[in-house]
Amino acid sequence: MRLNQNILLLGEKVVLVPYTPEHVPRYHEWMKSEELRRLTASEPLTLEQEYVMQHSWQEDADKCTFIVLDAEKWQTQPGTSEESCMVGDVNLFLTDLGDPTLGEIEVMIAEPSCRGQGLGTEAVLMMMSYGVTKLGLTKFEAKIGQGNEPSIRMFRKLHFEQVAVNSVFQEVTLRLTMSELERQWLLEQTTHVEEKPYRAGASEPR
Image 1 (tube, one colour):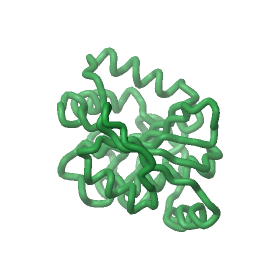
Image 2 (cartoon, rainbow, N blue to C red):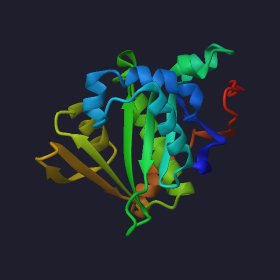
Image 3 (cartoon, rainbow, N blue to C red):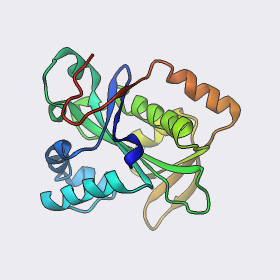
Image 4 (cartoon, rainbow, N blue to C red):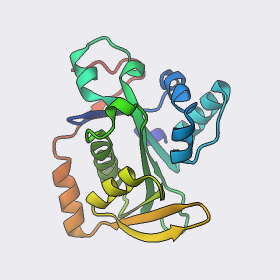
């Protein structure tokens, strides 16, 4: 999505930056993991295919993608590459042509050492806030593999409720509709987030 290609979102635990060619090699290494491909329902791609996919996601109007960086590492080690700070990604898919206010959200914390520390939770909250304030979204869905209990628990803590189970694909669908109270709660959770200008390869902490 071109809308987010020039912005950076700075949170407490994570920094969200647009997905650029700089990030592709590390992302490609992650997706060699059978576990991650299973959890994200992804097919194995060559590095060249991954670059094509990155370009497609940057251009497609119905996909909003941020790479998740470890904020502490990014802020305390000036000059370090974004690639070395990468821990995962967070995505919004605006693919329901009948309802442009619905976004499907997914998050992946690919680095095992970074899981269970709240990075995925903050990334999802920041992405939801971006979706509500910048993209006009009022409803979110998350489709998660039935065996991915940590992710299901996380989305339940964020007020999502299970609305469907697909036994064929072995996934559950959770949904959150943004009432005024939910919107107020979400914005309160993300008041600390700063939006900064972004230039690929030059997002120095400041």
